Length: 432
Image (spheres, rainbow, N blue to C red):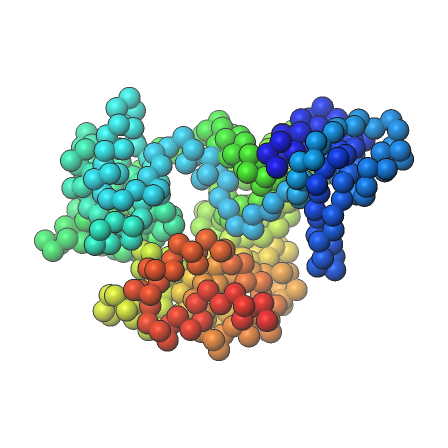
């Protein structure tokens, strides 16, 4: 399959405006009837598939550029329904601590990575659930390895950061710093901040990290595009872009230099959301960029205990997670989005968050409409069985990611009770 992907990439660059026939392939494509169709030849022109069939269709296009697929398997490009393109591009050049087995292992990787770096050290991917004891790390764990440069490491789900003491010092964070609404500063027994900041508390530190330039966004976009294409991912929904990324995407779209097709959601957390909405929906002539939805954030993630639950966490007494927005604020954001013709795609992981978001959608639909805009709930991860049918009634698309079920399958049984798990990762029920 890698062979045929590289052939297609070459063909799309050299023959984009011409008709091209790829023959002698083992090709498969889905049909509108939900079946799988086999073919041995494919014809495309101007980036669009014209026809599939057997090798004899070459005869119908005698002037086309012909490419021998040499019996390689040819599949349609994959579409990722929930990604973070610039985040992925940045991760490829930042410290990657995924699949680490302890805080010390992260520290050793950090020390090596920081040797020739100046300024803020940024990384991502830690998951304390994969470490002995499963406890959150502390700033002291990082200070042992790097204490003269500020360090910010995002959790694998992006809903918590782990920082060293230098980062807290530069951010002016101390024992008296309160947790913001929708966020939590984890504390040590002494009352001092531990170095882990969850959800909206992240910005207490991250607001001090130098802002990305358009040049760095472009570099991240190119790096992400190259990586995605190498995996056969040719299109992605980008779940929450800020104003600068919005500008870069539109510029690259007009230049026809986007590396992959992108369906971008405007971040509801961006201060310039209204400016972007007033500019209207966007769809370019090359079918490479579409912007017609807003990414809204209702709660945090399960791994950092930020997912908002109706009942308390099984492994943390009296803790119910974090709602990042009130129902009233959610309804305001929905109304704002719908008024400009944009759909609302809302992050909701916990059963409380899903319930509140469904209520907010329902209220807005009754008062102002918007039910036909193909609105989504991103993740729909833990939902009470009673709320699952409401997705169909309200025409809400449950945009679920398989990786959450596989990454959480052991941890979820610690975080949640059997009752809470009844509606968790309910793929079959949602499909039914």
